Length: 250
Ligand code: SF4
Figure 1: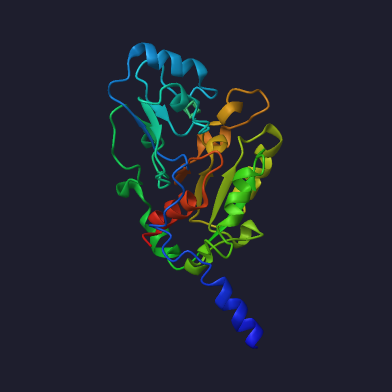
Figure 2: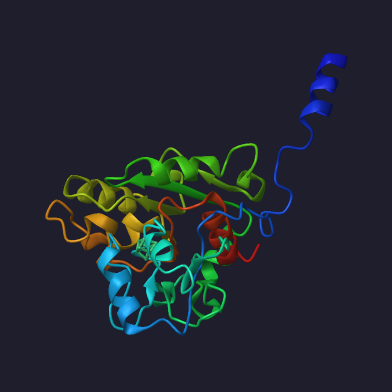
């Protein structure tokens, strides 16, 4: 008994008390800032080295739905592009993932289109089924981490479940390979209404570096309403958690 108490005293509190305000390392790559003074020549240089065509070669905007957060553009133009460590970058409108030069606005969900039925029904417990649709296991690992002793998102009733029949929504990772397209559709069809769709990670949002590859079949993404876009490559557990908490108004 005393041994256990001693272990508890040594370990201290392991869970993150406030998942909304928890600071992360300075080096974490979250929301980018692009200087308004970036020149056309600099935009062209950054555009050329970007591996996922995330930089608009005309305006210099960065699309977080395409960005793989390699930071090469910031290394190239340290005075003009920097990545802040703000991890709260999940949105519910695809266009809100595009960060324009000079923008200092926070990246947040647009309250006006959050589904009220979802908020009302699932505020006390949201069960999610995760489908890795050609994923590389990086986003999958970060999503699994949301339930560990540190993040412990289960304290809000948010959990991943083994069967779509027990789920209230689907979380998709990976660029959606051709051979996962049908399985994804079947899994979604098995979830009772009302249900939500979350895209976790750059690959799921845009295809990432695989965009345009003929082994992908992204019709499911194109044909359904998406409730939450969680950028990152992979997405940080806190980005996912805060996005879901915003949907549920927790
Ligand atoms: S950090 Fe994003 S925008 Fe910059 S070069 Fe890498 S993928 Fe492109």
